[in-house]
Amino acid sequence: MKTNIIITLITVLMTGCTYYQPAPVYSTTTSPSKFDRSWSAAVGAFADQGIAITSQDRGAGVIQGFRGGINVTGNIRTQADGSVRVQFDTSGSTKSDPTLLQRITGSYNSRMGR
Image (cartoon, rainbow, N blue to C red; front, side, top):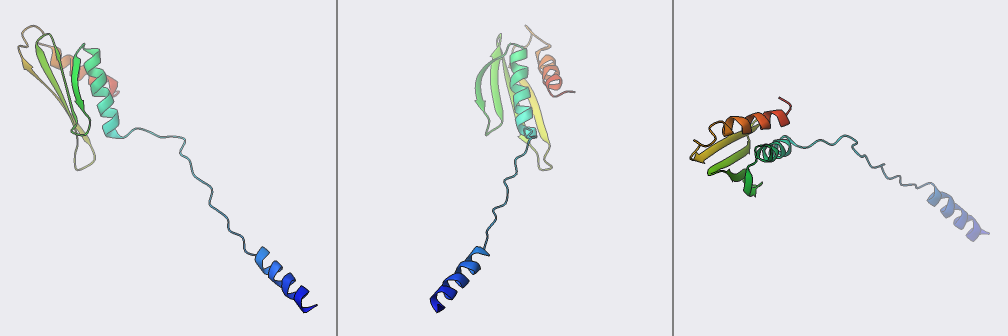
């Protein structure tokens, strides 16, 4: 009889211990980082203007390419305040296409919604 009471008591006490796991939280609105968005817009701007990309180093934030004897470099940098600075430069003879740099910048701004 004592054994039955002890077993019943242990069973009752054990059923009172319940562990509830927290429900996982999933974000339905994920947005790319400022750097990711700027990087994609810069790569797209190169494509918009027919620049053949020769190298992309995302870690360094550098895109390089060329079009008709003009070398083009895009630098994408995250600054200390969290903003992203994007700069496009050309080298070589720009006489064949003097507005290329302005068109790249315009394509980039358009892709960024500006």
